[in-house]
Length: 280
Image (cartoon, rainbow, N blue to C red; front, side):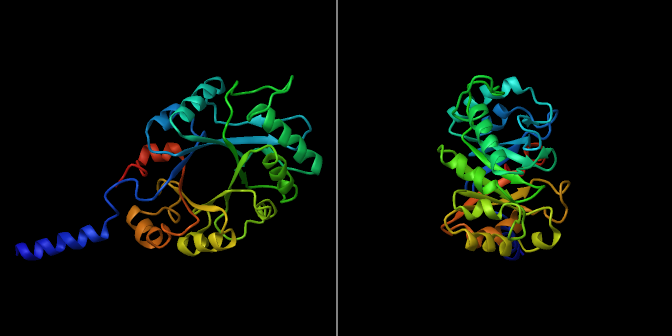
């Protein structure tokens, strides 16, 4: 009987996810969608879990010349600058995601791309210009993430070139199904060093997450390709992946691939609630 019990314990241990919470490599988290529940940016960085935090979203640009806006769901903007510096002092990279799943944004012309690049540079990055407000004060984010979920694809390649020409690190958060028509031109520039593939929000694609990652990785071999995952079944019952399914169905096949990047968690509130990135 004891011999059978020992055998069963071995089988169970083999089917479980690895025992530590760092088995998936670098970890990023999206922050800014749940003011009353997710905690501050500083708190997210102080967990020690995340290599990158992605602030969501710079979501008003392009429609009206000179009109730009940030939506971080009511978080006190004045406090974020100090938190950005705190995160950076701990070695956590801070990105600002542009676009999002709502808002008023588009790039109707080459001029609008140049104008948005100027605003991002002077308001959130390394530039300064009289008359341009800096919502985060003298803190500067480390790069820009393209999360384009509405409108056309034109001119985002020009925006990428404008920003890259000023030394700005660029990433993209793309839809699961390859290709993402709205970001195809921007990605074709070869200037976006990281691609976060959303393994959620697309039932057909999320049923085959390994295939999805492999298509993106093959298409952009010089970019680091990340898996962007929901932290809870409450967000997407089809897209949610238990850790053992994530590891044995996907990660064990790609962890050693040269352009595997890591895991990006959508989002901080649900990761805090479900403790997805802290499980092991």
